[in-house]
Amino acid sequence: MGSYIPSTREERLEMLKTVGVSDYRDLYRDVPQEMYLDRPLNIPEGKSELEVSRTVRAMAEKNRVFPTVLRGAGAYDHYIPSIVRYIPTKEEFLTAYTPYQAEMSQGILQSIFEYQTMICELTGMDISNASVYDGATAAAEAAAMCRDRKRRVTIISGAANPDTINTVRTYCYGTGDELRIVPVKDGKTDLAALKELLTADVASVYIQQPNFYGLFEDADAIGEAVHEAGAMYVMGCNPIALGIMKTPRECGADVAVGEGQPLGMPLSFGGPYLGFMATLQKHMRKLPGRIVGETTDTKGERCYVLTLQAREQHIRREKASSNICSNQALCALTAGCYMAAMGPAGLAEAAKQSMSKAHYLAALLTAIEGVTLRYSGEYFHEFVTEMPKIPEVLEALEADGILGGLPVEGGILWCATEKISKAELDRAAAIVKEVLSK
View 1 (spheres, rainbow, N blue to C red):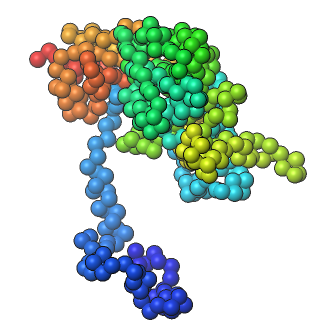
View 2: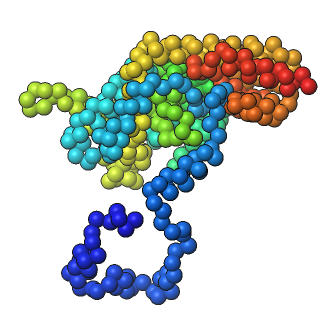
């Protein structure tokens, strides 16, 4: 790192002399002698830029990148237009950090404002924040914003993503609040069981639409039951599915959240992603994080400002309902670019193709002896099949460059997106058939 340190040896000696010491170790004279490390660190010698590049490339080549992905479960392999990859890598966006004098960075603020606007259009809600860390965090933050003094219980569907359930559970544990899990019946939220859990101390109910098993929940009926009990209704949504399904607002939701990864972010071995959050106007001041707004400056020209930010998150932390103090600005910019590039028609087309190809794959697989759909009901682009020889099937697919579905209780959770070709689906089904015929 020596060549990256801006000061020279002479300058460093001059600085030490100025503060009254002759050696940098004098700065640590109050540290006990036994705490000093008087031997070289056990690390390799420095390498040149070329050597580092070769080393990192060799490490990267150990990763397995599948050309065909038939697995989802919360992260999805969608097509990403080239412009979506290009704009966020421009240095004025890539290296920017949310400034404390926010209005000095009009470009960053505008990108957040446009993202918020499109999230509101997608969900049908009035207000969106500038994003949070991921979809599971968004669900947990939504549960927290719904609580009040009398209502402290959170209910979550057992058909939600297990990672989301665990994150909400962690938040509830941290605040000492109760979490209730609604049982799953035939792959969906058990409405009768939910009604029994809706007591007077319930603050909110979270369901995922479509749920973890790909099925569409009866969101309207669930919303009616939740509101009859006086609780708030939180819907976790797949943003691509929102291109064709009813908006959370149309289903009666008070808060809409979800994982924004499908909106232009590659799988990237797990992140970074972003969580989107949107709500109704009346709940605006409960929404955690930042909200960017549009106004006019002293010259009457359009400009962007940090409209709302819960300051107690920074200062009066013991009174805060959230500790979210930042946002995924670069990922939000990526999502904004994706939504702008795709437009309503493009997003709907991606959703239709994903749904169509998933149903095509399901038909191919269930035509094979021994393979059946585990759950009946309408589904989006994921479904669960029961079949024998699951390890052997997945191993054979992997050998052919196909990442098969995710093993879950009772079978395999498959996924198809618009990126998958008919030929790839036919090949995958042929491999499954061959394995099961042995």
